[in-house]
Figure 1 (cartoon, rainbow, N blue to C red):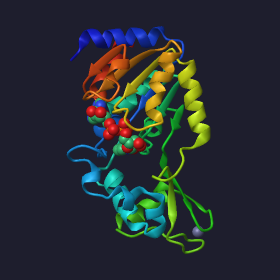
Figure 2 (cartoon, rainbow, N blue to C red):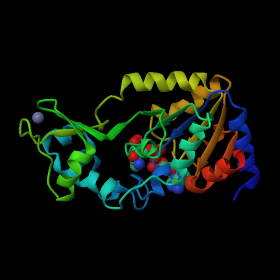
Figure 3 (tube, protein in one colour):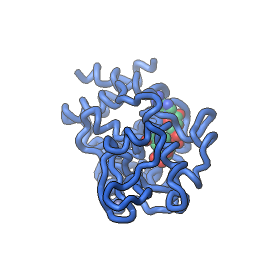
Figure 4 (cartoon, rainbow, N blue to C red):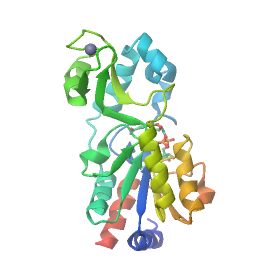
Length: 248
Ligand code: NAD
Ligand code: ZN
């Protein structure tokens, strides 16, 4: 592994006044959450228009629930050492905020408290017809049985997870908070994101424009490698615990 670079990252994190983290699908890959793009990505199997667009969901929610089952239930998804190391860095006062594009709520499950979910979360859902709220836990038995969740209040089959579907806006309050944090931050650590999906992919440049430094921890090269002060290529679940070990 890239020992020298890992040491350098640890030093940058300890020195920073307001370090923030930006995560993408890559940090959950070692938990068994399939990615969307790439060879075995879910878009090879599901049509995004049918599975995760708001118009598709209103038409027929079944493709979405099949997709959700494969995303989180088929592999008994649990937080991995990368998520856990980030939660421990927050405990040490070394991470101010985790901004995530993920909808899998693994940061919260591993103990991170300060998390901004820019693409929403699968952890909660709302009936589009009567607004009754549901937790993921309430829906799991139904999805596992291969059925479509039905509202026990109004019998509608349109229980919509609180994720941002294609065709919907990002949550404005969370987006504003992320922008402010990026402006204020003197160090942003981007982990497991190709930085291809906007507007989130603009955040590292916001930090840099305000004089902050940038670290990239990713398995492959991404869309914006030229921005970064330090790039550590490899698995988040191996690199983050190494950084934590040096700090401890
Ligand atoms: P992306 O698929 O565009 O990029 C993922 C990046 O992670 C890739 O560059 C890849 O090289 C890297 N990667 C893969 N395994 C890694 C590992 N073990 N350690 C470090 N890096 C690794 O993902 P994105 O940038 O998050 O954008 C995808 C969109 O899909 C987002 O909008 C997100 O909401 C959504 N998504 C979410 C989940 C989830 O909730 N876990 C999963 C898939 C996609
Ligand atoms: Zn209802």
